[in-house]
Amino acid sequence: MDAQLDRVGKARARVQKSGTPAAKKALTSANAKLKDQRAKVAEAKLQLAKANAMDSVRQAEESAKQKVTEVAEKLSSKAEKEFEKAVKAFESRWKKAREKADTKKVKAAEKKAEAKVKSAAKKASAKMKMLEKKAAAKAKAEAKKAAKKAKTKKAVKKSAAKKAPGRPKKSPGRPKKSAAKKTAARKAATKKVKSAPKKSARRGRPPKAGTKTVARRGRPPKKASS
Image (cartoon, rainbow, N blue to C red; front, side, top):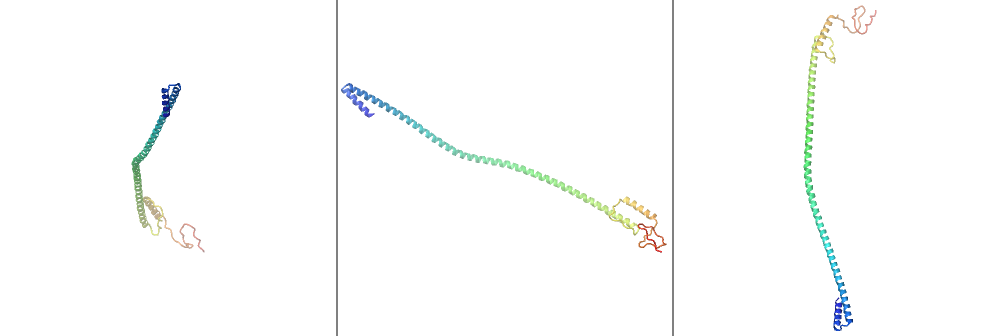
């Protein structure tokens, strides 16, 4: 560019000195070349400006990306910390709420268990009272039965003492009769004994021939030998 300016200056000086058509033509040609070079320089400057502008855009973009990355990292780190805090806070609240709920459930279970124990104790007490009542009634009945039995034995002994000696005693295993029946039976037996003829109660060998035998039960007596 500077060399072309020198050529243009020299060509202008020749035109001014000689004024010949050749000098004028050389000046016109030098001016055209200078103009062309100036246009190229301007284009180059424009392209350079564009390139610089794009470069600044790229730099701004990179800077923005860097800032975005930094912000994202900071937010991520902050989010993690806040998340941990939130989790701890939530865990603490959840544990407290769960502990409260579990305490209520445990108390309800304890009340239910106590109610069951009281019910079982009540049933057991009622059963024991019933068993005691039954045992007392049984003991009373047995005592009454024993007293009645003793009274009956006493009455039998008295009756046996009044009877004639030698009469066999009643077996203890014989079923007892009521007092009225026993009295009636005793009276009937007494009348029968009084009205019946006396029989011989002889035991052993049969009587000899010629003697009067008493009728006896069982097998007939043997005949006397002549």
